[in-house]
Amino acid sequence: MKLQPMGELARTHTCGELRAPDAGSTVVLAGWVHRRRNLGGLLFVDLRDRYGMTQIVFRPEGDAELLDVAGGLGSEYVIAVRGEVGARPEGTVNAELKTGEVEVIVREMKVLNDCLTPPFVLEEPIKASDDLRLEYRYLDLRRPHMQNLLMTRHRAAKAARDYLCDQGLIEIETPMLAKKTPEGARDFIVPSRVHPGKVYALPQSPQLYKQILMVSGFDRYFQIARCLRDEGLRADRQPEHTQIDIEMSFVTQDDVFALTEGLIASIWQEVLGRRIETPFPRLTYADAMARFGSDKPDTRFGMELTDLTDLLGDTEFRVFSSAIKSGGAVKCLVASGCGDWSRSQIDKKEELAKGWGAKGLAYVKVTGGAFEGGISKFLTETQTAAIIERAKAVDGDLLLFGADATAKVHNVLGRLRLAFRDEFNLAPDDLLNLLWVTDFPMFAFNEEADAWEAEHHMFTMPRDEDIQYLDTDPGRVLGQLYDLVLNGVELASGSIRIHRRDIQEQVMRVVGMTPEEAEERFGFLLRAFDYGAPPHGGIAPGLDRIVMLLTGEDSIRDVIAFPKTYKGLSLMDGSPSVPEREVMDELHITFTKEP
Image (cartoon, rainbow, N blue to C red; front, top):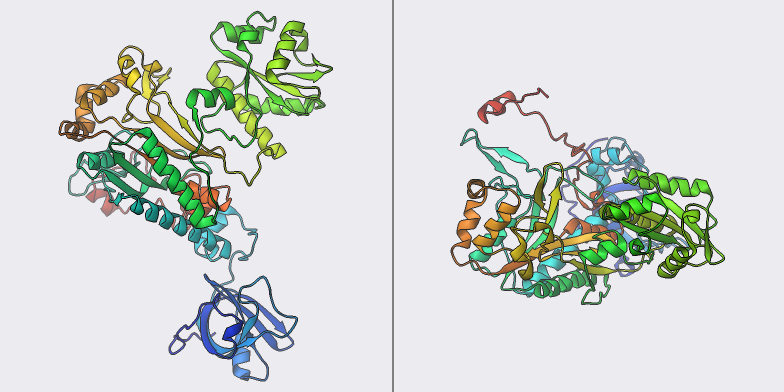
């Protein structure tokens, strides 16, 4: 088909703009051929752009050559048309389209570009595989659903920026080429051509720079920041993600909470028109783990963990008694109404538990105010009555037990709880349960390395009352750390930061860093603390996750324009790629294993 320049056919309206009052006017539309229908010589084309869709009509009594050219239009051809807006005949109005009352009778058309047969149909719901969609991302992004997702992302980012500016925060960009410093994940490295043998690191977050901005006196900062981490991927992770990065001086934890609650409420109001009640409830890390087995609990439904450790110290069931004697815990979940489950149904849940590290999954059924089946024969009447009372179990319930090290019990039963949520739709979709989880442990002990590690990062200020234990009992130290959780998804993470050199050096010693290593890696930050660093703290809501939850998507990949696969590959452009030998030589790079 002959292609033509657009020439005089300059667009006057978008494909989502025309309405009944426009009837009788002459317009020029441009867009993609979404669908074509030939009804006995009368040719209808749905013309699409990102604003919507308009039906255009080619009539047989018009220009025969024009009708002939229109008959050759294929899916996703790019065209421009001039014509008159007319009201659709009675009975043909399309109430599902905003432009459904009108159509454009075409008098002139130019084909601006043709299109190969697309590898998949741009339809809803999409039937193409994820890999095919990623390979032809430019086609996938033409779908109205995908465009709506990215427009929602735009509105969310704008709402965040407007709110934070109104609160007196200043938007400042921080470097993308930075010093390599350990922050918890692997860095992406950029070799320097000018300085052979040296590298930059792409930022995992703007953490150190935003702290230095506080030392610099900027007081209230934010940035829609790109963060890059070379780590294992899953549905809610990407090697590059975006966060709404916030830092403020002379603030308490309550100040950070109030600002963040206003930010989240503003985004949901601006994007969805939905009002969110503030303040959000709070839960300590210890309580979250004890009740829900998770530091990001979904509180839209009950089924909380019940601690039975103190009731079963003298039990005859060796699995329980052994766990308790070794300092662990025995807890249970109550699966309401599942007392009639078959052994095969229970076995399926046990296989899940084993996959999460459990040795097994003990159970009992409640019948007639007593236990039957499973481990019931090992429990005395007194123990049975006490368990039923504490677990608030009733006839027809199924109790599932975890017995092991406390952390493992929490992990297994917490994940099992979510499996029941998904299987039985226990969490109402229309609820928005936001809560703060606070007082996280500062450190975790790595058994393999025989060393303490920072639980989040090493720049968090310990609680004032716990500073005394830094050198003597690090496992006892709780940090001024906090996460914001929405329906079981971590939406934001932050902390009050260390602003004193002596405390920062103490924390670095706890994680095994020598003074020489501290100076080499973080000397610039430590020196900044010597020059009047103010108390400060912040938070970083994840924009990708916010948009995922706003739109009801299951993965952040669909709310990112050009995401990677779970292996970190870009199927569209073929990255990562092998550099030319000349580039490698110039950067003094040698691969130990040829690609």
